[in-house]
Amino acid sequence: MTRAGGDVHYRVATAPDHDAVVTLLAELLVELGPPEAAVRVRPLLDVDLRAALAAPTVRVFLAEDAGTPVGLSRADVLSSDPIFRLRDDHRCGYVDQMYVRPTYRDRGVGQRLLELCEGWFRAQGIGHALLHAAPRALRFYARAGYLSNREMFKRL
Ligand SMILES: CC(C)(COP(=O)(O)OP(=O)(O)OC[C@H]1O[C@@H](n2cnc3c(N)ncnc32)[C@H](O)[C@@H]1OP(=O)(O)O)[C@@H](O)C(=O)NCCC(=O)NCCS
Image (cartoon, rainbow, N blue to C red; front, side, top):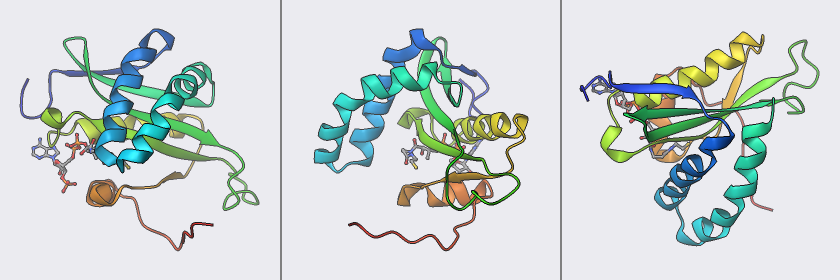
């Protein structure tokens, strides 16, 4: 594989990709931690991904090298986010579950996976994308044009 990630191919994941997608997401959970969250969420992935891969409002993109999955991204169309509810364009895109296996990082795979989500949103006339960034990924998303807004968070 070249440094620029030229041998990596990208496609939309479908139902038969379920196990590969769950495997990648399990790796993401372990990496993001904390360990107790990974243990709690891991059993939920199976049902969640089965639903996502069948939903018209969700698209999961896979990056593969010679047929081996090396990364993924997930795009959800949200239509009830309160920020957008009273706008003409009341839907927004939500980017989630971005993950690239460590040996494939820093060569543009993540950027391409993000662009695939954005392109799918744009194709549907959606004009905004939202995401919640892991602290370590803030620079990656900022480089891709994402701005932090005034959203604040409190655990209840
Ligand atoms: C965040 C993540 C998806 C990014 O994936 P990636 O494939 O490394 O992303 P890219 O290669 O497009 O960009 C990563 C960096 O490599 C740089 N880069 C991209 N192409 C490059 C190339 N050809 N040569 C050298 N550097 C390159 C980018 O400038 C970027 O730098 P930055 O960190 O300063 O923004 C990946 O690091 C990951 O899976 N992290 C762990 C899980 C995680 O945090 N997920 C996000 C949850 S919100």
